[in-house]
Image 1: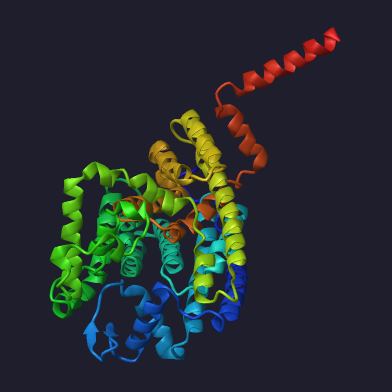
Image 2 (image 1 turned 135 degrees about the horizontal axis):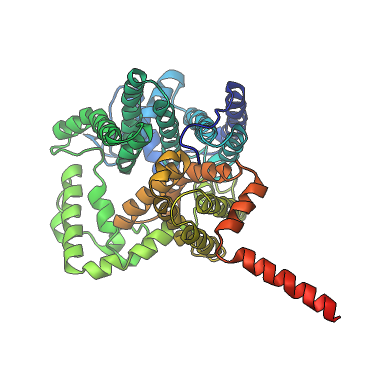
Length: 485
């Protein structure tokens, strides 16, 4: 890959991708607006967003009439949809429309990122792959954070690429904007903070500037979250960075009963020290202390759950069908849920296989090793266990050495997968958590077709050890057998 941007997609193609993506997602939102009421965590987000829009703040009304300040779930997503509720009314369709718009911008971002260093054609393909991604499209009616998080991260990646090509003064302003978007993503999903330094690296032109940019973007992201943290210090009785559920999740992640995924606390047992603690932030702190105590007592047992957590996160998503069925089982019965999950899994694995091929055949170090790792990952996609193939993405990116710093699609995909794996290996896994990686994987898959399939195969013949000799021996064997006959 060249070190400078190769070709930017035209403004017309970006508009076309946005219109197509919005038409698809908007159609699903219109279809789902009257059919799907907020379900699962989405019910909480909708209620809190409604209260924020009414000027009541992030508070919770209990059945006995008591009202308490809350911070259990991150404030970013209910805060975003509260703005829409304030403008257009507290209807789930408003939140679905917002997700449709953000998802459409994510498709444009994928096109812009790939076209900036491969070709306009590859960028167009990447944008369309995101626009029509079955999981991302079908998740539009879900009042959940994963699709919105994926869109915000994709947009941040686009802004990073744009900042890198800008003049120094303009780049400084873009870095500030990038820090703000990263901070918003953290408020929606706190583990996004792991990706803030990566956006800074992508936006810098090189050298020590990468370290400075990474520190600046990360610092600004934390600064954006600071007012909310100060609010928690005052309202919750103790300082909580974004949300008061880290201790809960860590405790759940120590439970063998969950086999790496979510399990209700009632099943694993509430720790004795926490049973009479009813203050939200302090209860979360108590759960965190109990979780750390469990880990100290049996560290190997906790570590043994990591493969199960990765399996629960990456092997099978099924999040759209799960949510739609939970919201309205008549509109999406069990059979439809299963078929939707099977179709999206097929598409995701095909895109991941192509993305692995793209990383294997990029220029850079350890070319032969990367080819064989990618091949092993692709083979694993034929089995129920797919998480090794996902982990191959950051491994292949790192093996390229410094060349990967000039490859934004690889950086984004590798960073998203690695951050997701680290976060949920620590806590617990669920299929919907992998959704933040889907647009990045789709963009990387689209970038594979930039040079053309024939050139792609030519590169493979050069890098697969012994393939030319093998083909030559087969050809000679065929000539010999024909002469004998």
